[in-house]
Length: 501
Image 1 (cartoon, rainbow, N blue to C red):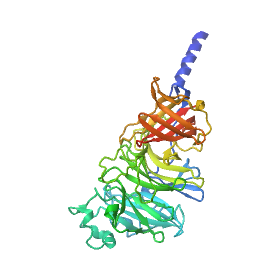
Image 2 (tube, rainbow, N blue to C red):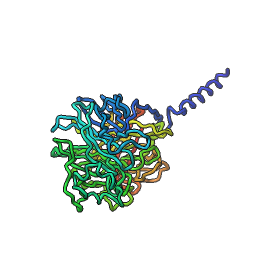
Image 3 (spheres, rainbow, N blue to C red):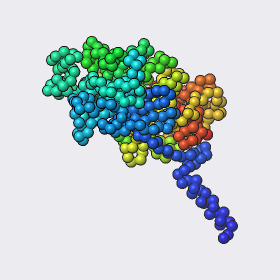
Image 4 (cartoon, one colour):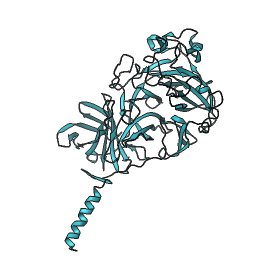
């Protein structure tokens, strides 16, 4: 064979291999592209630490354990009397299901548990919900001597979806007095525009050690009740219309009129002095626009506000512009599939003060398959939390001590915006010049950036928005060495940028 022809053939073959999907040629060389699916699927993951191990508990009595927040092993699965997560949930009296019954498919629905250790009891507490319709639900709690369980069902503590005919199956009149339930009804039926769907509980301790429960999904929004640490039951407050406090359901925090606000979770961060309220907007399916939003407050029971200082009260008919959108659907060049519908998160702070976000996510794979993901959260100079653009892999750190010439280069950027829809935000290249200018791919000026080498803080002006955030160093999910920007705007947008070294 002609040696010149052989060389040409070899070059063509190498060119085809380099473009086969394993690598993608960019302005800064080759980018490795991989997707490594996990080995568990846990929806609505709630994270807790016990004996140096990490546990996540999710809907449908699914749970998993990890030693490193990256590799998970399932240890319970499926709503069944054979599931060892509970010792007595399916006892003959079916106490947790007595009011709600079975769902439309004839199954028992056990959703969105949250586990917390209660030092006052010396017990692990699990709060969870059972439900049979979009409003007929109740909240229950169970106790265990071990984080892994088994958990013993104790009682049902809060009900929603009752009517004039079914209110006697609940504890409503026991709490507020006989015959005093009409304010929860509209023509005899439950008014779910103003009052909550009793699902998605999550508990937290405040700075004084008091215990609180946030809960709610769509319907009348998210509410909060204090929990008696000695008994596990709600402390029902005195009604205060001016404060948005109801004597049965507690204080209204966000949402209402069936806006898509659900999966609330609160953490208190001693370093910043703020309570952070996470919620999910949109529909939880792949193309439902599911996403994570953030509010904060100086008090456990609010008011919780976004970057613009706005709360999501009953006067907000359209909730799209409210709440910092931490993340929605997105893709980067190093991902073989886009992330879709990230949401229903929990969070934790370790002994070193590092903050972790745990959520489930779907993918652009044409199915509803989902997996848990963990991300680092970083504190911004103005007291907010912003998320790493890639899954936790033990390499993430604030990029301190860099020179601007080391930072300059192409960044694939995603602005998550504030929309609630199925659009996948594709990363677009912007060039960060060492002189602080940001240029478009065609060379036009788009904005400016600055960097504090002592703290790793970054500030940007881009698209008419001012962003405050953090420069990160580490590796992405495909093993690429990267610099990354994660920042929040004064318009509740989240901006991610990834520079492949």
